[in-house]
Image (cartoon, rainbow, N blue to C red; front, side, top):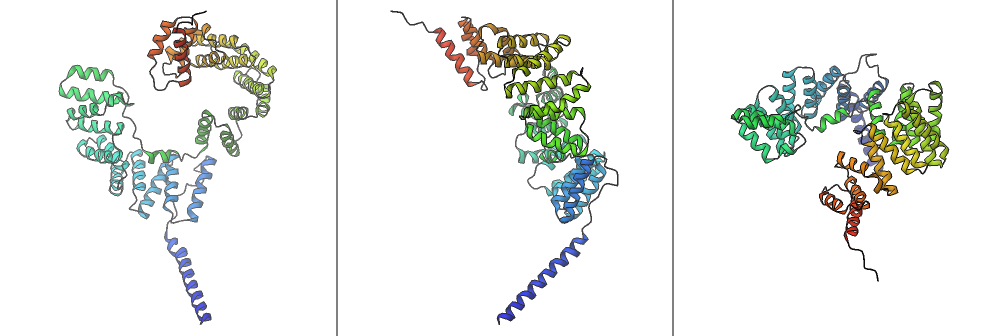
Length: 481
């Protein structure tokens, strides 16, 4: 019995295996291959590599909707619009009830100028979207552009049910109300949701100007139009943001490197630079980027190894000279080698002598003087840089750091006042100016300024110090015995 039972189990397993193989070989064989670029049509080697990797992933799982859709979005993100349209069309035929491929197909058709096909694809997306608001939102925009505000309003209100009172969406509802001859409703909507206090206020004022003009309220229309500006704000669409994130060529990689460096993620940027070097010989600018990342991530000597030969070839190149000066500052700070700070200062002073407006050189001079233990001279360098370019806040911000670190409040009211006046949103500028006024014995001015500091973004430590300084200065000294 046991042998018979084993045989039956093996037989059933063999049948199931055969069914699985049949399904894989024959059922999946019926799925069409996705559209592919013509030979040589994609010149960017990184983009070509990413496309090939995605095609290989689809070959491994030909029935994967997500992988096919991502390939289509990669085509769209990298301006391969004809391929993207064919790819999305194929996915809508394979998975006709999914809204995403229809939505993206509509976007491609819209870009191609085929408004009728775009609208038809978007209608398919709307009918399949369920609670997802983006198709209704986009359909509303398309209908507004087609001068069909009544239909547009229905779709925009449907999107509002899912998104709530998003200011951009509300402004489109305002536009529909104005276009369909209901200006009072548009005005009421703007007032109810305080849209003139939002980030899209200029566009809202534009719509209000149109609404008041329809109502014949000329003065209100003129007041609104005086504050109007800009075009229609972009909708906050995470689907299209996902597409944009699939930009996969060398220009996109370089943009991501710059963004990563601006965020101070030096090690991550180095990894990306190494990837870039696989596809193209590093240019001078890319070499400078790598040197900056090395210096900031703790390897300034390696950075110098990159910049020194470049500087030997072009000794008068100001950008290279400043790059080397900044590397020297990193060596001075990390290795306690002040000769490097002195060399950086000499470079900066030579550049300032011929180009006094060069803020990068002023920044090197300020930091070098600070490292050399000459804070008053460093603050004087900040003052010089500020006077050369009073619209540039960087010198004032650096000065404020030095003033606070050395507590040189009394002598530097001009810099602190300039920072507070020019950047009232600076969290510590007002409090630092209070401390300067207290040091000078100008207590009434300090108290009045302190009372005006009501921003929720104030730096708590500096505000507390300023408050204590005013309180202490205002209190009578204890009587002596």
